[in-house]
Length: 98
Image 1 (cartoon, rainbow, N blue to C red):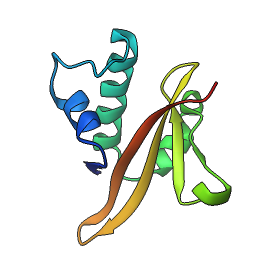
Image 2 (image 1 turned 30 degrees about the horizontal axis):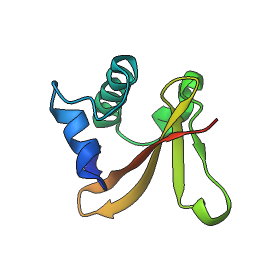
Image 3 (image 1 turned 180 degrees about the vertical axis):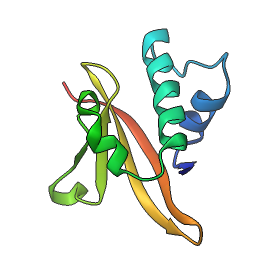
């Protein structure tokens, strides 16, 4: 899938190996691994298959967003957009859920 970023900091985090964006090296490593996994996935059904991701649709005012686990404390928030060549993943944020 194609990936776009809402925040320039997250895009830099995904592409610049020397940039940590204030996150721990372990979290940055997992984030970059998730970006590779998202790029390789044909669609979001693959995320549901991996139970360790805890991939889920959010509810309420955020019912258009999804989240997946990065580690015990942080989750990656994403949305989907439609493009001519299929769905595009829009990376919204890394959020502390505790």
